[in-house]
Image 1 (tube, helix red, strand yellow):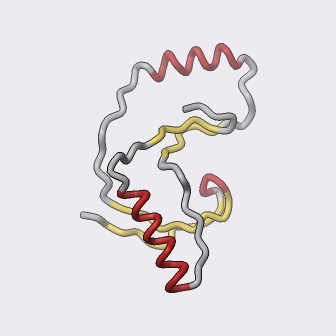
Image 2 (tube, rainbow, N blue to C red):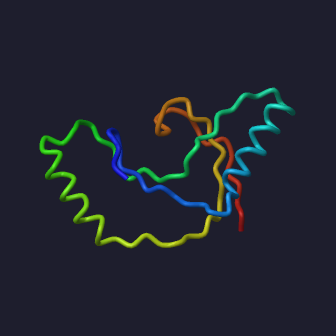
Length: 103
């Protein structure tokens, strides 16, 4: 997916484990610790950020689509969860607070 600021891969989670985990954690953190957290509404992996708009957007989109067609994205296994504090977009500010190993 191309947006005005970035290119990203949307990640599908049809069985909603991520949505359910975010909802449960948000509620627990607010109720138990008085923390008001904001969980993102999407799951994605950013692979490209624009520093400026391409000079020839039409040509860029055509080239991007041509390259993207050559790649097949497959299923994957998640073996860790990172708890982060994001103070600026795209984790340009913030830190990893804890790493949870799922193996």
